[in-house]
Length: 78
Image (cartoon, rainbow, N blue to C red; front, side, top):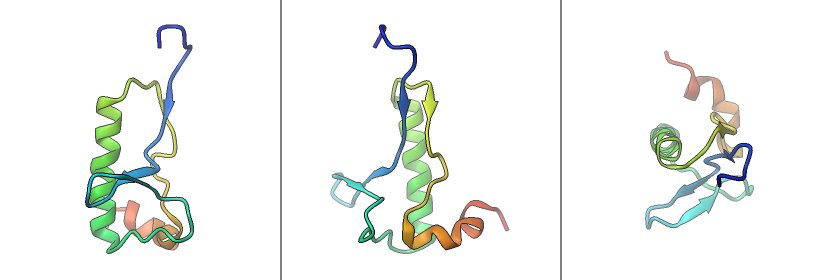
């Protein structure tokens, strides 16, 4: 790690109910109930930022395809 100029990471894999990481980008990914997903996703983003040795956190507000049309309502407070 000391030889790298920087470390880039993201959180586009997320733990499922069994703790196994699943890819969120395939078209068949089912996020479940949108608000529950976004709460879990935010918690996961924070965990990655706090625990990983990174300099750049990529795609911080990216959403899987089933939720991309809800981007404004999920990321914007009422």
